[in-house]
Length: 146
Image 1 (spheres, rainbow, N blue to C red):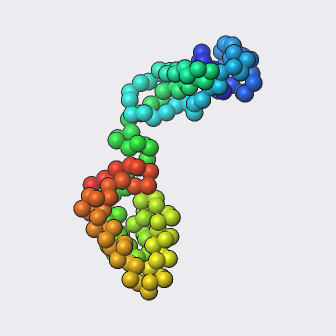
Image 2: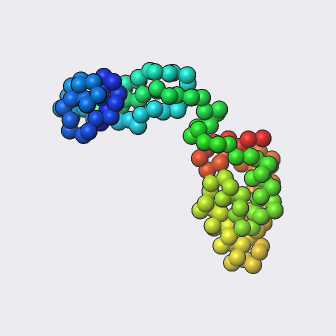
Image 3: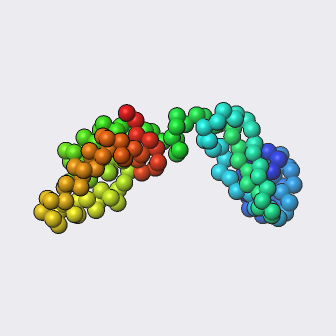
């Protein structure tokens, strides 16, 4: 539960905020939030509150930093590296492991093994698609760097 006054986290069921002493409505409102979020905006020190009936959503943008176009703010993977891994080692799914698609990488290993190597064409095709720009995000939705 988060305090509607200062935004600090309070124990569930608490009547008053341990930080500022504000009333927490006796648990009538359920407050959702995870502290500072990275929304790509320069909103330093702001508090956003959205009231939806009995539920209240509150987020604190105390440390908001730009995320350079990444939806999840993670590090961008190289398109060239991913494409070359797909072309050279695509049969064992190395490019998918690099991009965070672990399940797909394991499936590629199994398909290549079961088909006695013919399934490695799948990785070769994906490598070419990455270099051509048809596959342009990693598993987290972050765009690939050129």
